[in-house]
Length: 405
Picture 1 (cartoon, rainbow, N blue to C red):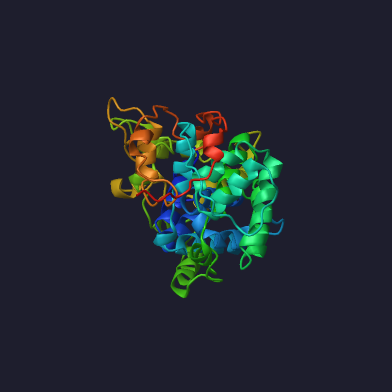
Picture 2 (spheres, helix red, strand yellow):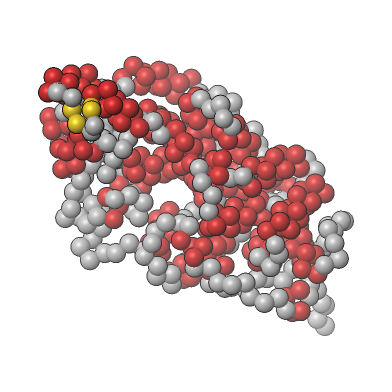
């Protein structure tokens, strides 16, 4: 386990940053983002913020993409990252959404999509029946149907259709959509890596983003603040002066954010991480900040001398965690959260972290509870996806209203 600049577990800092940003706790979001930055984890902070947006905001908070675009560049400052963290946590709760997760759950269970109606936009991309079905589903806001059909098309064709669609049917925000799609197709510039799983996740998110009606688009693309509010900026200035001091440890890690995401989140109640603070020299290794500092005092991985070791402690660790009170230690370390016989599961993880609004899919609790996979990483859902069900004439035939006499 690696410790941060102020001796929080790094995996827990990532977890709490994601947690606080989804709960619209602006001050704590900035604090935890600042902790990652002061520990040398700038790229990882961007990745965590991006993942938080993907899973908890997504289609209904597209404006964050516009402001996050500068994070994909080569010249990024800590102020840029802090502002993006603030903007993500500023997004109102009513724009929070878990549709992406629920749509992927439906896909994992091989659920048959709804049929679409004859309601058709004025323009169509082609006379291909499958593509017409997908465009109608987008136009009618039937997200799962649109996503289901997109799985029968090539990746390149799906992005072509989505770009065509926003040019013709989202004129007020077409430019913003196109810029956002460019960024999503190159999502590794924000996430930090590319994978087959995230190729699917991002494509699904893009499809969902085109299913918004006009009012939803207006809210989703609504401008975010261009600067951090004065009270939080004042707090940031105070934290700058306290860096490296025990007083900087203002906040505790909430155990509610740990399940399935961290080492402690997989530990039993009878186990504890408190002892990790006693092995400080071992556990600060791996943190970019501490590795950079230790290079000055080490030679070939060992202290140059006892005097150099003492000098290091005097400069950077005036008060060893062993001297902290129990309550101070428990701000960053403590007991596990799992019961004696409890095992982690994706179903419990979903219940804890994906139980909020889902505008495109709902009433999925029985389906989610039937998933028995023990890996709690959300991208695990991709490995559970069923092959797309075959296209039939019944699915393609539009639903028509008939008058019964």
